[in-house]
Length: 183
Image (spheres, rainbow, N blue to C red):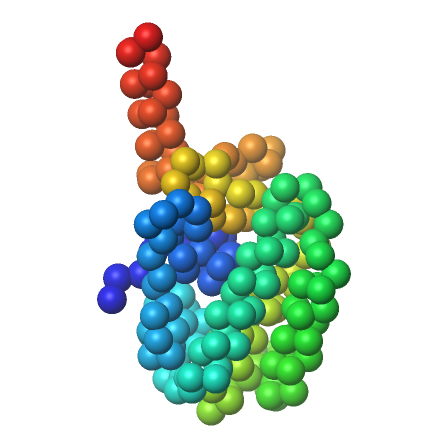
């Protein structure tokens, strides 16, 4: 199964962008099953050899939608709903219970082992989400006519406009060009 390119700029945003497009009538779900979620996690470099149960899969999709609402609110300059922030907190606490403190290089880090199932996938996503909350002004919504993805603007001056210049940026520029040519 081909997955969308990872244009979000952070694991949490890449996870949110597994519906393509986010708006419009022709939305494609890339995480169609527990095994598809595990395969995507490996593709995204988050976790390997994770067995995801049906309950874990549902939990992951619920978290994805919570993250989307939080990031979309931030991208639009709004405060996320208190209920969504509470759900994000609860997901982080639940996943943290499965974490183990391990030595990585010269430091110690919390990691969730693959044997923890979906929590091994959700841990790096939730850690990424937490880091993104430190720079909410860098979270943007793609204005592409048929996109709606959220992404991290890593440009120096904070003016990145599209999730990807190669896809949405090019389509948008072509639409504007055709409109100018027509009249």
